[in-house]
Image (tube, rainbow, N blue to C red):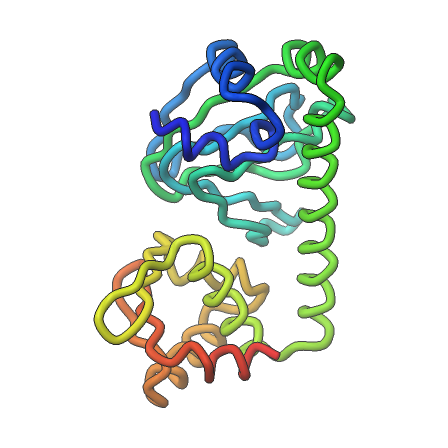
Length: 225
């Protein structure tokens, strides 16, 4: 396990190396493959997770069966932290979109650890606040931004976390199917595919299997506004 990756998580950010190692030793390790569900919306939630490798999507399902993808998380990112402050039913379903390794910490152990380290609680609250801010932005985008703009913004967000420089652009291996990308944007697959085809036709990006290469980031940024 890459300790530097784990230390990117807010849970570890305020800790000394000694405390970080002590906490890591108390955490359980898990491995899930693409399509495996870590937990379901509505299940009791009492564990926080940090991704050490791979990707996890967080989504919700409407009563009529439609799915909405709220976030895609990767190495160093954390989820389930609400269990520290409000143990209860999970508000999302967590599913692996690639082979994923995680470490988890239960509510009791987390509460005991944080009770003597208020700086860790502050970092966790900051993480929750950032997630709430992103949720508010996503709601605003659904109301005020058209589908192509939301597609451009989603691709840029994925690029900021999973992209790597290649000749001529930024390769974003997002590991999402076309349907999952549409769920992330909050639109139909057909509409999202139309926007992607338009961007590709303009030379802004190149589509690949569960990946995309961004060729003109500046124009995509302008389209996302």
